[in-house]
Image 1 (cartoon, rainbow, N blue to C red):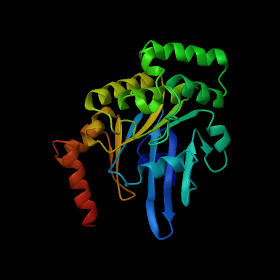
Image 2 (cartoon, rainbow, N blue to C red):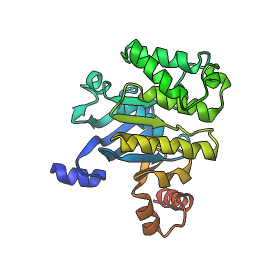
Image 3 (cartoon, rainbow, N blue to C red):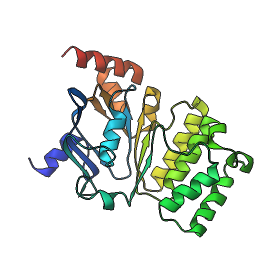
Image 4 (tube, helix red, strand yellow):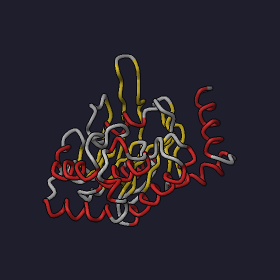
Length: 255
């Protein structure tokens, strides 16, 4: 199949990320079922679905943290299976459950992860000064386990982007965060987009779909809808993403 036709099926032209027929099985259980999609340069792609839908498994395969059962992933025309070391130099990942060490404070986490990423002491000091302008110092000096979830996620995001990655993967970054802090967090994501970053963000909060340029809805390891939010709503005649999701799930389960 010509590449232009493949890209059309995958959902975007000139993709920076290409996922083709990606599958993950655990014994007889299929967690991700032959999915294909793409992400354009500078795009915010929202990966929507309930817990257990296959979102985290998909991200982990894309960035090389989990072995691919079958299928292919390309990032900037590099193969994740063959070129992972090079790919890791320009991607950032904020995991769902383990982003920061809970017994360290924010500064200590930044020092650790900055050092692992190869940042100099001067660069780490600059980042610490910058975050102290956004979050009170007395909070940044507390253990991560003791600070509010919204602030904790801000610190985790900041730590993730310290090495200035070109492509950023955020796995359930607003889980457990109140609506106001969720909006603030999405403003940070918008700022990253303005800076030219490409972002794939997973969430089970369907109302967050409106923040993304394009969304993929995944259910039981299958992509059941993908496209721009307002186009999907119009096409399905739905008045909300929740309504759209319910219709898509019902349609998928009856076929």
